[in-house]
Structure formats: C-alpha cells, structure tokens
Image (cartoon, rainbow, N blue to C red):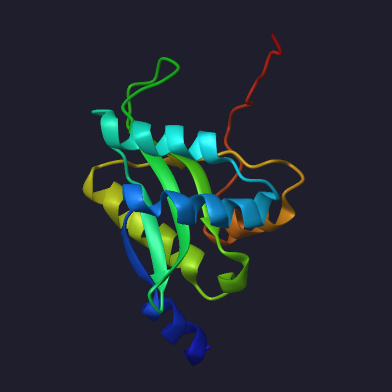
Length: 153
C-alpha cells in the first residue's frame, strides 16, 4: 500500500493546454479503439474559446502525458439553478492505469470544483463499460436520480 501512495504522489496534475491535443487523441484511441481527432479538436477549441468556466486537466507521470479529463461547469440546466460540473471525457493511458493517475486527476478536479462552490459532478458512462463504471464507483459516484433520454432524429 505504501508503494501505491508514492506512485500517486508522483502524478503531476496541471491545466490541459492546446499542445496536449495529440496526447489526448492518442490516449483516447488506445482506450476506445479509434482516433477521434475532430471530436477532440472541437472540444479543446470550445474549452479555450468559450467564456464559461472549464476545468480540464492533464496528468503527467515521470514527465510523460498519461491522462486527461475535460470538464465544464453549468450554472443551471433543465430548470434547476444550481452549479453542476459535467465531466465530458476522461482517459488514462492503459500502460499507466492502476498507478493512481485517474485518482490524482479526480482529486484535483474535486479541489478545483470545491473552490468554485460547485457541489455536484455529473458524467455518463456506457452501460457496457464495466472498467469505467468500476472506476467511477471507486471514486464515489452513484447512479443519478434521473433517466437520460434520447430520441433518434
């Protein structure tokens, strides 16, 4: 257990930068099986250009880019006027999973959101993504008291 703690302390978490785009695409491709360049180019462009609050982070271990998350804050949606953060995308390089990278990202995100007075963090996970569901469960996430609906157009 002591070794796991040391590894977590070695993870450097910082603000995500435009120069991180290729690293984000690379890690995501390892996790989902395809490169989503356009998706991440749009997300990073929005993150830098929009005036809303964004809390997007990068993780480094031994100087290597090994994880990221893209998050934004809403100050009301669906008729509720309370701040909530939305975790859009999250990824850790498979070679570094299990070394505290995801936990370090989430710990820093919690601190940042707390400092902004944001009391809830929301995300969505594919039902069949057991590994990500287990990660979120370990981080304290619970099923939301709402149902996400979709309509194909």
